[in-house]
Image (cartoon, rainbow over all chains, first blue to last red; front, side, top):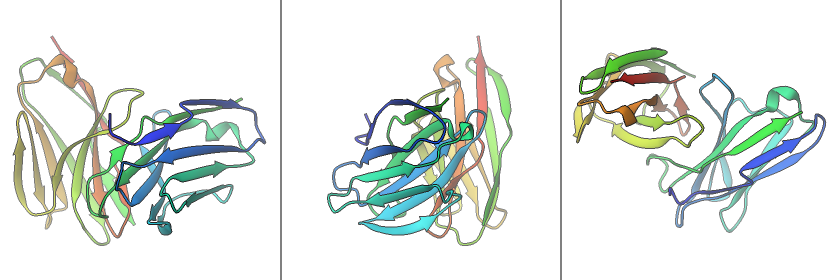
Length: 112
Length: 108
């Protein structure tokens, strides 16, 4: 168990809908990262937060947004969902910024 | 930006040694990580290199040459449970970018 908690584990929804994925980092970790992993693709970096502030942005679509709350948990919001958004979404956390990442077990999103 | 290359697949026999190479180009370098990922599961940390040289950790070793933009992960005494995807990741300015991964299949 990495100590990073992601909910829900599975999510099935329809095109055009909006969903929210939640992540609780390891106790004491200030950095939260979001990654998308589609079938046959590597981990694609979406966005990173450090102590509530956005730190780095990757190839995140405008339909996607995220935030980190004062209690350090984070949410990833995906809207106007398309079939191609179906993927495994991972959250990871680290203490200081150059430390190794600990990954949650992921949220499997299926858009039908 | 960052560009990370590693082979797509490798196959080896139980008890053998396999070396997975990773080459990278990055603006700003703050370390290279190797992760193991079994299908459908979360990646788990294997090793970290920030200075040139070899880091050994049990059956796994990782090497880094910053001047060549090159790293390798060495898996010794392969076991069936080592069948997985191995991800090379480079930390540039803040973000940690992953390569597409190398699927290692261990055969009896």
